[in-house]
Length: 288
Image (cartoon, rainbow, N blue to C red; front, side):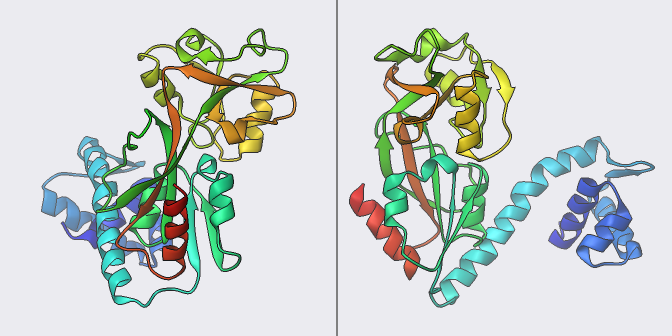
């Protein structure tokens, strides 16, 4: 399939409009229609209904393939450009909110850094496509176990830190005075679903045996302060790395004692880091 036609199709499907897609891509509406017709002829199936503009069943299936295919193409272009280019003087870092612990922040260069807070799915993609020189992702894992990464490109990961995790409870919660908590005994509690700010509920559920952890409130953001304020106000529990959970006003951080899990942070890069990226990578790996 011609990737130019595939990009046009994805844009039309996302915007549900030929004219809006033409405006975004810089084509005429006639050219967009020709791209879609050519792709439908190539695949031998209609991909879009016209009124309203929406994917057909075949079009929906193509969309499932299109994202990873286009990402791999972008990653290949970025990889070749990265090898051919001179090292940049600055540093672009993509990181999840809870990966930015005190050790990471202390290791950042004093100048020339662009820091972008992204979701766990977006960080590897940013590194693969060259939007970031380095990435930092985090998650719940057994001690020394690597995190699972999406297969978006040939990326290298290195562990740069592990720390205990805590359940963040409102100060008046009946369990706030405990010295430790088992995740299993909290499976039926009220939880905050904040996959891009805290540790995802799916990871807690898997660690505790695959049951419970139903959300009482969903937070679709990356600001840790909002997440901890929601927990302190009693809207639900959340699990955070110890450094992020302690000293939250109106809340108490109680360590998770079972199962034996840690908050793990990994450095993500494509090819050997160079320039300022190499300096940060070396600092984080030496400290780890």
